[in-house]
Image 1 (cartoon, protein in one colour):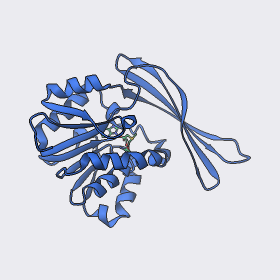
Image 2 (image 1 turned 60 degrees about the vertical axis):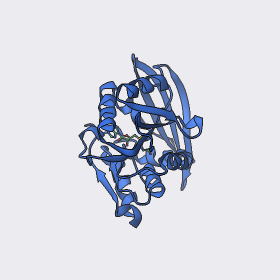
Image 3 (image 1 turned 60 degrees about the horizontal axis):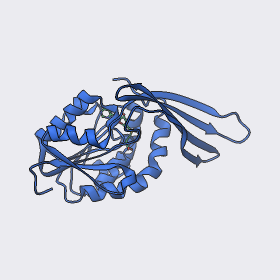
Length: 244
Ligand SMILES: C[S@@+](CC[C@H](N)C(=O)[O-])C[C@H]1O[C@@H](n2cnc3c(N)ncnc32)[C@H](O)[C@@H]1O
């Protein structure tokens, strides 16, 4: 698997930090009462892993992260916290290649579902249908666009570390019936010096709420919105499970 985050890993985790200040509490609420173990899909640098560990202090966590760059951040974050080091296992593969426990209490997929094509999503729904324990659930977020449309260049991050400012910019364009290409620019600015820029592109499979619901229904799963509407969070449970 090629590392789509090889050149952006140093920016991605820090730029996701503000998002996690709002995502973390909403995720914790959605996970309340869930059993373990928990899979953090595409854990990145571990913001979500840490939020899961706080929300479910007894649960064992499997943090699945294929990108060596982001996994380095994740390993450091897990290693520095005794609470995480004891019960977080970092798996260096994609979700569909990961050796996971036979029963899953929860699966968390934050800012990642667009990395899976329709066949990959189907495999995830099959995994959930086959392995979710009673009271178990999955939580994921859908990010715009829900259709393959043009997203104009937008600055989504602007932060300062030391003497440098770090800006994150992104634009998207259609690349197929269910696909967009994101063009990301990470700009490092220091007074008096020319900005340094890192540009990366990646494919993102678009998905809207109606299609999500239809796909899950086919697998005996039900889905409901959870948390503040602007976060696009969805809670997935087994259709027949009355304990969740
Ligand atoms: C935008 S980052 C989000 C990281 C983290 N979930 C967060 O919100 O802070 C997307 C992550 O998905 C991971 N990813 C991409 N393809 C994946 C796959 N097939 N299985 C698991 N993770 C994947 C990437 O390596 C990256 O860490």
